[in-house]
Image 1 (cartoon, rainbow, N blue to C red):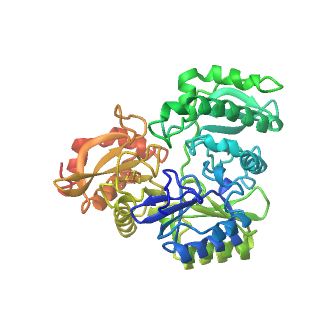
Image 2: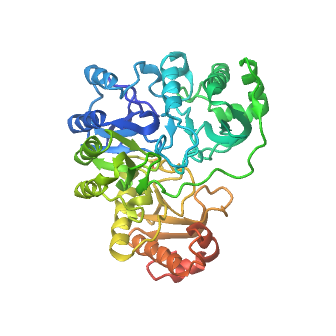
Image 3: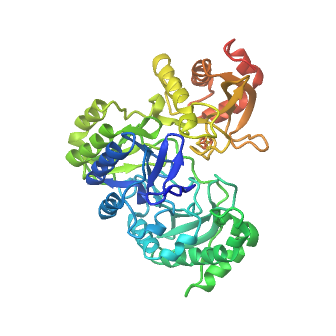
Length: 490
Ligand code: SF4
């Protein structure tokens, strides 16, 4: 019998991609054990393309499978805690938390117990399988490596009010890919689970009542933002409050957008635990071969506490390393062919699967991202991460937020090319990639053009505080980019 494929893949319901069957493992909080790393490495060696892909939700994807996983393999993954014990809820999106939860020197609150409790709640309630598989919850403990700006349906971020810790509620009231917004509700940690349950129940009720609206697209379930757009935040909170035995505590909304992370987790960082550090590792385009993945798990076992953490920036962290062992772990990372430097060109280059993995792609984004990284490595010393995002079409699967430089794959005269976008603040109407420079660049010229732009930024910015986006807003326009060289064709 031909298998039925899902749009949002999970282990029990994989998707079909250009390069074979694609399966996704939910990793709550992005925390893996060495044993789980070994099991994933064996899984991809046996059934897939011997590689492991870290997603922008700190999940794991394995690609290139020729057949779906058999029930014995799935059972083994359940026993190892790599698959939900209840199949139907396995597709619900991964629970996100800061990759430095519990070890970050700035954190106000350790969200890891809440991640476990919420995961247990989801597994114990198979009726929630009717929700959109994109339903997503994020816990932010006030760490320096913040995740509250990541696109999620619900966000809870630690704050201090009169010396007490609360979790502030954020909801996805914006467009697809936007960070959730502060809705002016602060929740005591002991009440968070009850509030989350009530928020989910009201959304569940809306889903059950409105699924018929999507009968033409059977697999399309309403998103939480659709409920919020239809009824408004206050009506939603009112319905939630009706399910609670206590009132929601209102507090003034913050006018500021949540912090944008700048790849702060990469490199060596002292932990809250005296004498221990973590190392953030650059994972090129989020992909490792199984030997590298197994090797990182082994380093964590030998020198850390046996934990490998995945980040929503498609990188990884080895935590809890005694400071005395830092050098040997750094060497071990290098021996695996990886870097731990935030200034490595791969630190902040992101690309979707491109033409080899997705039929919607106009370009081979993975190959072109590698060409850019190689050229930057050979031609330039980068003094801070510059976020470069290559997308094979305007769905922007690899990264929903604006980047420093966005490269959108297009076809020009039958050839692959890229449209260039820059800047964070001034967006063209309708462009989620940033400000369009209104030209296309050939794939051959792309590495040189990107290197020129970074070189100009590094040599001409007005101060070290000026971000690439701010500089680009002032400096780069259609004319200035054309003047960068004959390599660029309009
Ligand atoms: S952004 Fe477009 S081309 Fe890239 S993986 Fe998503 S749908 Fe495919």
